[in-house]
Every structure is written in C-alpha cells, then in structure tokens.
Length: 124
Length: 108
Image (cartoon, rainbow over all chains, first blue to last red):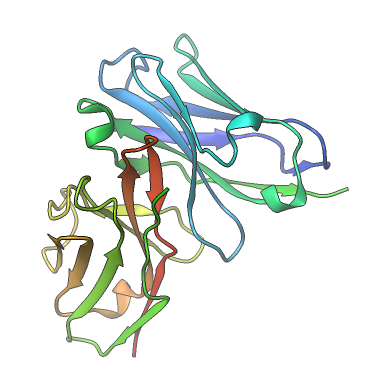
C-alpha cells in the first residue's frame, strides 16, 4: 500500500522560500510508473495543481507559478521536494502531494492516493 | 488555456440520484477524473478515465462523458456522500493539469 506524507514549515514570512517534502512509503521512487505531484488548496477554495515529476524525471509546472517553483526527488530517501520562492499571503493553504501512475504519460494523469496535506500560512 | 466549469452546489434528498457536471473544451481530447473531499480530509479518487471506478469505491458512483462535458452520477445518495466534488483533466496544449472549481453536494 502506497502512502505519502507531507512535511514542512507551518509558518512562512512573505518573500521567504518555502521547502516542502513528500515522503513516499510502500513503493520505490525508482519504480517505472511512480510519479509524484503537488496540489494546493487555499482555505475554503478549490484545488490547484502546482507541479509534478514523472518517473523519468520529467518536470512540469503550473504556468501561473512556474517561475517560482522547483521540484526534485531523492530516490535514496524516497522523497520529493518542492521549493517555492517569494512566498506571498495568497500562497497560504494546504499543500498535498499525490501519486501519479505515469505509464501513459500526459494522456492519463490522475492522483491516487493523496497525502494528508500540510497547512502553510504565509504571514509576518 | 482551458478551464473546467462545475456548478457550485447540488442538493438532493437521500435515496435520490445526484448528477454533477463538469464542462470544458479540454474534455473531448482528455479523460475526466473525479475526487470526493470531505471537510478536513484529503481528496479521494472516485472516478478515473471518465467512467472507471477504483477498487473500494461504492457502485453507486458512476461517470460518463459526452462531448465537452463529463458527469458524475451518484445513485441512491446517502448522507455520507455529502462532500465537495472536484473534476480534473489535462490541458493538452501545455500540457498541464486542470481542476474544476468544485461542487458542494448537500444531502437534504
């Protein structure tokens, strides 16, 4: 059974850089079909896709956030790391990581399972 | 760029059928997916590739696709189905992932 767990700071000041870690259990990140995505949700609002990294290390980013994001993975630690620069109060929300089965690449992309999420507040 | 449009809310009585739609120009080219999110919880996949149901999801959940619209149908709605539902697809022009704005299902 695959499980994912997010970790990172609860509070970040404006203009700082956020670093979030997704730790994956139950499957190796070297597994050919294992991709990981980040999705966020401002309080009371809709889900918003942020970024993902496929099993072949291909990276993809939300067009609206692309200039601020970097996604990477450390297979030895079974972790996927997301960094977001120049944080703003509008970035406040719950950040989820989720598994992608990327066998079919972009033609079939869905998220299952999801981590429990981590709430990040941007405030001075 | 494309968008996915959902009704903000749908209300239904227990035992009735709820239909939640999701419309967007990306949908004829890409599959639609549906997630259920209850308060304080992470989303859960309930339908993938328009109409496939993951293991463990009750049979009352079904999906369909026609043109620019995908539909989530919940037959015999139960009180436990009250939740927010999000559709998701892919914008092939990016490519990148799209989410709908979410629909709050209220069981009266």
